[in-house]
Image (cartoon, rainbow over all chains, first blue to last red; front, top):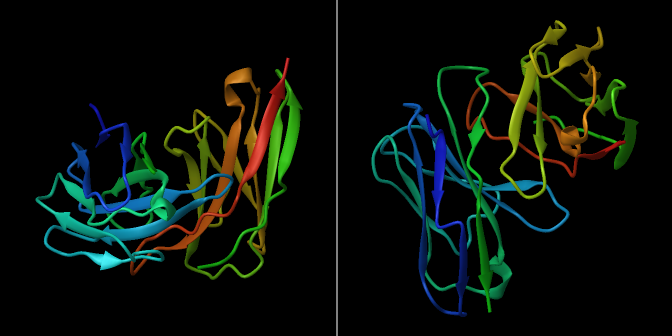
Length: 113
Length: 111
């Protein structure tokens, strides 16, 4: 059981390039989330998807787009990367109802030059 | 979502119990307390959660005060592998189900 899988693990981009971060979960969870973590800080929510076919903005959505491709997959796209988007990106999923916890992937480390 | 306050850092001797406090004085009646930890730069690892009763699992115990304004995560026999940043999160169980992370407590287990 792989849980939440993120690809790639590392990526270096130049300013202005585009990039899609992939996330897949095999736990049959309805909800999926994208967070970013900057040095010395906690995670901040970028976008989330409460169920297949729905997406909503989180705290820091500017510069990002998402696609909930199906129940398993939730991708995050940077259309025109900026140095301020250098960060570690985490995907999470949550199943069940009410108080079930989120489960996180191991992250994508993205550097934008 | 209620905000949480945690000490920036703590040390604990290997083999001893690690007690990590968290204040959440503005917590509402339907808000759960969750604990996660993050080792190095890995993804946050779920530890335990609770509403008002004390909880225990194979990793830790969670003690929530009767007024629910604070809680303590207890690692009963800390090992070097428990060195990590521990996050206390309070989240309402409706709507976005999103977490609001603080900066957490950096626990260092000493040999």
